[in-house]
Image 1 (cartoon, rainbow, N blue to C red):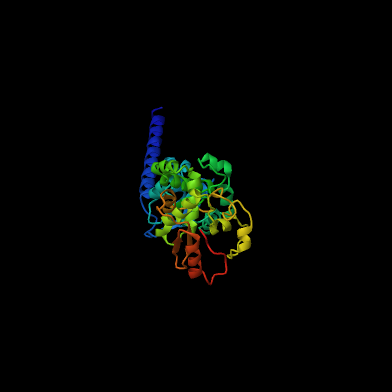
Image 2 (image 1 turned 90 degrees about the vertical axis):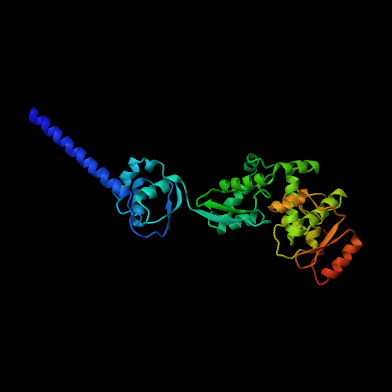
Amino acid sequence: MRSLNIAISATVLVIIATAGWFYSDLKRWAGMPTGPDRDTQIFEVLPGEGPDALSARLADRGLINSIWRFKLLSRLKTADKTIKVGEYKLSPGMSPAELLDILTSGRVNLHRLTIPEGYDLKQVAARIEQAGFMKAEDFLGEACNAEFAHQLGINANSFEGYLFPDTYYLPAGITARRIISIMVKRFHQQFNPQWYRRAAELNMTVHQVVTLASIIEKETGDASERPLISSVFHNRLRKKMRLESDPTVIYGLKEFDGNLTRKHLRTYSPYNTYRIKGLPPGPIANPGAEALKAALFPAKTNYLYFVSKKDGTHHFSTNIKEHNRAVRKYQLSRRSPRKRS
């Protein structure tokens, strides 16, 4: 019996010693970079990918040099259950422990997306497709989802006007709904309490403000003129004059080849402000902060007309006689209809 106990004790000691050696070896390995190369590479953790496949791909990319050690380390740290899907910047110069920390942190690689002021939904969708996030049609499907718009507090049947123009940094694989939510959140951050109060003073809803701002955005060539252009539209609305804005007509056309004709101006659509009175039913683009501000705080003028001077600026007039003179002066060679507002 005594010899049996000695044998068992010896076996236990061997097991403990072996386990200690394995733990010490694993700890040493976990803290050592695979190689000297510090250049990062993009590594994507795929949805539903298990530890076996993940470890094998890390080894194939030269990011680790022992598959079984990495799997054991992942299990000991319970990281095999917390590794997050996405793109990561990794390098062989990182230790396996560092790699695990990054893969479980969710600090994914971000891609830049810039949406210029005045882009409409179709242009935003095209820019998102160009950036490689998803197909334009998939984004548009969610951007025109009335139920989703209402869920995010938008009193409209689409997100036209509310996808705030800015530069965003987004992860690969992001959904259309997530992109829209981020952009709408940025819009709400910009539309501050003072602006809500000002809209109420003007007896305008937020949707009307955004609609007017989108027209101002599309009409403006020189940023300094936004308040002046806004004043023209406010003055016309006050006098119950039609806005007569070319960009609204263009927005309502199913197809547009770049040449706005008199036939287009005579054709009815809810967005043809040569035919309808007041604002169109919704925004025609996504305005930036300065256009929104101009819509809320127009310059104090008596202007009722403006016409392009073909240099990015406009000539503003208070009456039709003066406006017609400006049209002849600045648009004499132009064959398309003259801009009257």
